[in-house]
Length: 335
Image (cartoon, rainbow, N blue to C red):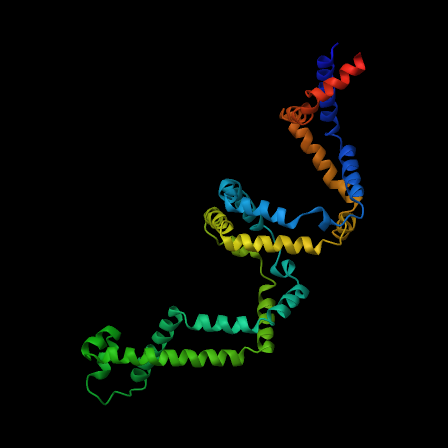
């Protein structure tokens, strides 16, 4: 047997050995434990270059099309989740207990400036302005009719009952004058309403309203709401969400946020070592052996059944056995 034949035999033996080992739970358990121990007290932040990592992620986000590429999977998952949730008796109170709700409320109450801006934006929306104008007009008209204010003027009351358009035609340009007045009055009314809301929506009042809303929502079941959704809604939403997420990922804005997040994450991990971090996350060696190791072994077994594990291993180890370095060593050993 020459060096080339021996190298090929060793490669085949190595592939077969690795194929069997990768399907053993104990192998993965040792690999996971040894990997954690090997890192020891080395800070996680020292193992990661934030600039290099941010650059990799940025390059990926610049050309990302992942969500749309996985759209059929996302649609299927969304529909399956909603179908399961639609049959689940869990209540809102179980999903968000009172202690967590109070913690969220406490943080929300600190957003006073944002609250005032939101009120201003809402009350200055054209739809709100039109609604208030319509309410004012209807109130004025109903008051004139129901209180008989114009009853002494022959024909006016009957004209008012014909409706707004008819009144406008019958009374010439009076309709436009009323509308102009209401538009001006609406702006003043909305400004007054904004000031009133800001005075009324104190932290105490908001807390009372929020708690009242929570008490009303807590017994309700999300399943009851989900069942009212039209069929196919999940798929339609997922389709649009996939397109939006990919477009958003490509924006410079999103990429800058991701880069800032990566740098902050690495900075926060500078002094934390991996064993301590895994322990804090509840990922103990026992839990890894119970869940992750069996999953990896089962995954390798599935790949083996599909006939892709051996070629993958051969590609990984073949570079050495086919190299001149390996053959030189074997030739010296055989000589």
